[in-house]
Structure formats: C-alpha cells, structure tokens
Length: 170
Image 1 (tube, rainbow, N blue to C red):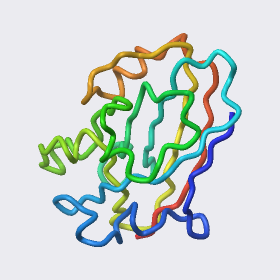
Image 2: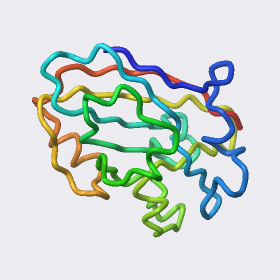
Image 3: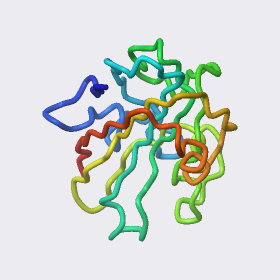
C-alpha cells in the first residue's frame, strides 16, 4: 500500500490546511480544511480504510500526542480522499474526536472536534504522522469515536498499515 499527501509545499502542509489558513478556513481559530490523500496498491481483500493524523511533537507542549484527525470506514474504491473531505463528508466515512475536545482547548463544537482540526504548532515546526490502515472489514464506529475505540475495533483486522510524516510550520 502506498499513500501520498497531495499539495505539499517542500515537505510542509500547505497553509490552507494549517495554522496559516485564511480566517474563512478556520472555526474558532482551528483550521478545518483537510488535505487531499492518495491511496494506491491497497491489499486485495481490503473492505475499508481508516486514518489517524497525530502530532507526537506536542507532548512537551501539552503532555500528550495531539490527535488532529481520525477517520474510518473510508471506501477502498476511493483512490483519493479529496481536499476538504472532512468538512463536506456527506456521510461517506466516519470521523472520530480530535484533541480539540480536550479541556486544554475548551471547544465543544462538533464541526471542530469531530472533524479534521489542522496543525497550529505553538513552539516550533512539528512533525505530523499520517497513518493509513487497510482493514478487512468496516469498523462501524459512530461519529465522534475516540482513538482507543478505534484501536480496539481494528485489532486483528489490520491488513496493512503505512505511515508518512509531514511538517507543520510554527
């Protein structure tokens, strides 16, 4: 399986997907336009695709890895998850809670906490890990699921897992 984040700028997420997005591309200061992802060479018996997008460089800042996006039950027939698909999802896939739900952020708007919430690194450039999972079944999680629920549901159902890292600028 191969994955590729489209529209990168010299290894960095483009401004529209992160801290430097225009105000109209933010909700309560959080960038909401998700980046496009290309999936190729999925295992033959893939029934669904899932992803996590996590900032492990946030640990010294807030004490835990910051979850920016969780998505599951993406059709394996989709070769590209289009730009802004998180916001215009139209029930094509299920999305989990990101870390904007944390008391540190004090946000409860589902249009922020149950979708892509782009990087806003406060201290320095951060590395962000996109992990894509090919699964042998649909997980049937509910919108707003948590990462631990995904880990339990996907156990013994991961056919292949691929990670790539992208930078987000301070």
